[in-house]
Length: 189
Length: 200
Image (cartoon, rainbow over all chains, first blue to last red; front, side, top):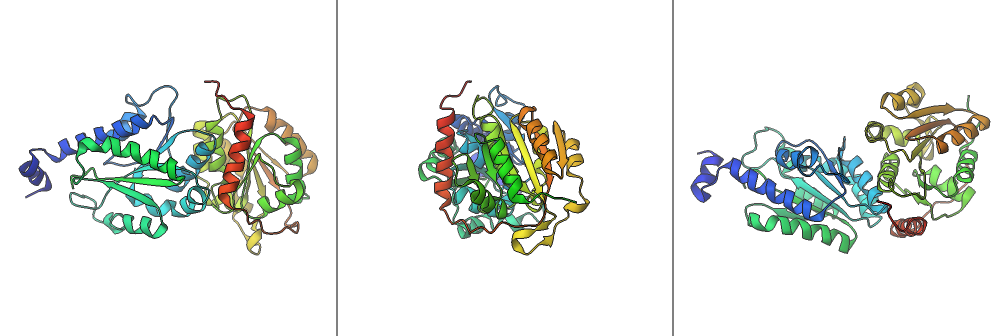
């Protein structure tokens, strides 16, 4: 039985439908924050979300959307944006968590600069890449070891709550003057 | 052959742009700027985050692009740190913030850790920057060239890069141990005082 079959059996929804619903919820959550800068990195699971901001309705005047070549560069650009009073959001995959830890801890965390990162989960059930789990399975442990606050959105949270939770994570990052990561599972689990 | 000491370069840049937002790279750049100019609200001091000086300045420049003040945003970076995050040259060239000026103080070594050589001797950073679509880039080796390049950089539409070849002479300077949260807030407070209202 495939994961798509499992989803259909349990909820009547296919993996593609789950992906579409959860992507829409993430978009709604980020749009509720109304970021003026959206920094992103390549992600197949985030394709719907990225398309919304790159060339869809989210690519609106007054908002700059651009790719960060590497996660740590995005963290540093976001730190500068925050210092200047802007509203940046970062979107990338959890296999990039290892790339950003030094910049995150010596810049955002140390300087008490809020940062919201929406981070897609990889490497779990439904994964098609044979090796990405080697880093993705350790994302929570890496963030915990680094003292980075994170929240997870997956099948345990009704998709109808996702947008509000992302918006709350933005507020929480600002209230506590630090980076907050929202780990989002778009692959059905 | 360079005849400029880093401290002299920092003194000149600070004097030429006393009211510009500046991001100071870690190590000797930050410590020597403190020694020659003192603690200033417009200086955002990086205590670590090697490789990210230009990225932080890019973020500030983007965030301030609609404000009339404080004008140029200046990053003062070293060759070793820039080479750690060289991809930012492509991001800057792509986004083209017209208010960004980057100085690369290039002494060819990781001076703070014992002068181990960097790769900069074989890298034409002016060509790299212009190939990445920066609006201009210059290399200078003397005080007169630096003064001319600074006048150009502060009046030219950015992003522009000035590579300054420097000696490995170090100014005796104490470690700087301020709480980074205070550094960030001091900088933000200075910035708010410059331009409290966005124009758009």
